[in-house]
Length: 179
Image (cartoon, rainbow, N blue to C red):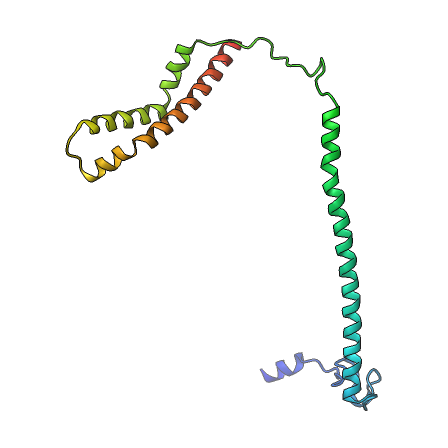
């Protein structure tokens, strides 16, 4: 087993200084053996390079902020031009006029009948009838008292659901008459 592992290992020499394959540290041509500068000089050079990079970054950042501010000002000016165009242009023409023709009127009693058949309307009407019956009682349990306390909420919900059901019923009846 050890012979298999040894045969799979790479036999090419690797430089310990530059970490490149194909030569040893004593034969390295990419990095010199001795330092060209002292540690303090290298540190000062790195810090100067970092300061220069920071200046370039700040300059790019300021330029980008300036461009973004110009873009935002142009963007803010755009909707006013569109609004002026919409105000000055008329979009009503003979070809864009309503082609629906006559709007069929529906009977209010028929609308009420259709609306009262709505599931949510019937459910809330039943809850409201139960609350009215409970109000007539003298002694109420806690859950019954909570139900009676909800009367105003149920009434307002019933009105909104009933209005929505009326609108749906009117729409359905007009559609039936149109076809």
